[in-house]
Structures are given as structure tokens and as C-alpha cells.
Amino acid sequence: MDRAVRLLLEVFDQAYKAPAWHGTPLKGTLRGVSARDALWRPGRGGHCIWDLVLHTAYWKCMVRRRLLRDAEISFPRAGHNWFDPPHPAHDAAWKRDRALLDEQHRLLRRAIGGLRASYLARRGWHSRWPIKAEVYGIASHDLYHAGQIQILKRLMRK
Image (cartoon, rainbow, N blue to C red):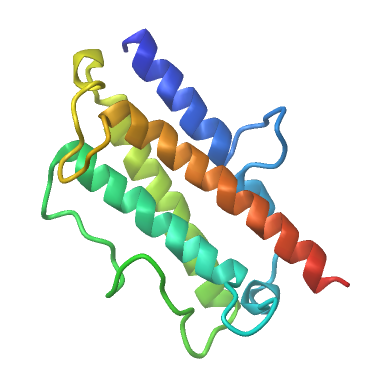
């Protein structure tokens, strides 16, 4: 595997699940969060943790679609970007949606691992961003929402 692709995979994994100097990665923020906690909202119109899990899973899927230039790739839920948690929401559904996030991470990781270095500067399919920016952008997206989840957890315990 090319060195540049390997570095992108490290950044991608670090933001999602690997130990990192910057703090808790996205998957780590979900440890110990119950379905009930995941539904807590800081106020009217605010996102809950469950919203953020589905949103980050969706964007991992969309970045994979762009990298592979494959119109057949679609998110397994109807809609786009922001999704309502299932009704009724319960522990099994919460576990299923966390597994969906893991699956979308794995699928995107496989797509990134298959990239050629010469491809990294090319624009993603239906995107104005180069492929390398799509990859480190999705890692940044994970970290951004990991921070939001940490704040939500603190707020709900006040």
C-alpha cells in the first residue's frame, strides 16, 4: 500500500476508534451511552447523540460513494443527511444503529485502502474536493461530532 494512502487510513482510523492525543475518538464517545441517553436533546431543535450517529454513518457512506464513483451505493435508510431516530426507540435499535456506523466505517476504510496515490489529487465524484480532502474531511467530521457528543453527555448530566 502506498505511504500516502496508509497515512490517510491512520488519520481516518484515529478519528473514529484509535487512541489519540487529541482526545476521545467518535466511537469512544458512544461507550456507555444508553438508548435513553442517546435520545436526550439539549433543547428544542437541538440534535441528540442518536441523530449524530446516523448523520456520521450517512456521510461515511456518501464519501465512499464519491471515492468509488458508484451511484448504486446508498445509505440503508430513506432520506439524507439528518435522520430521525426510530420509533419506538429502544436498546436493540440503538445497538443496531451503532453497528450501522461501524459498518459504514469499515466499508469506507476498505475503499480508502484500495486507492492509488495517483488518484488522491483527483476530484471526488460529484464533489469539488480532491479525494484526499474527502478522506481527511470525513475524519475531521468524525472529530467534530465526537466533540459535540462529549458536550451533550456533560449537559445531560447537569
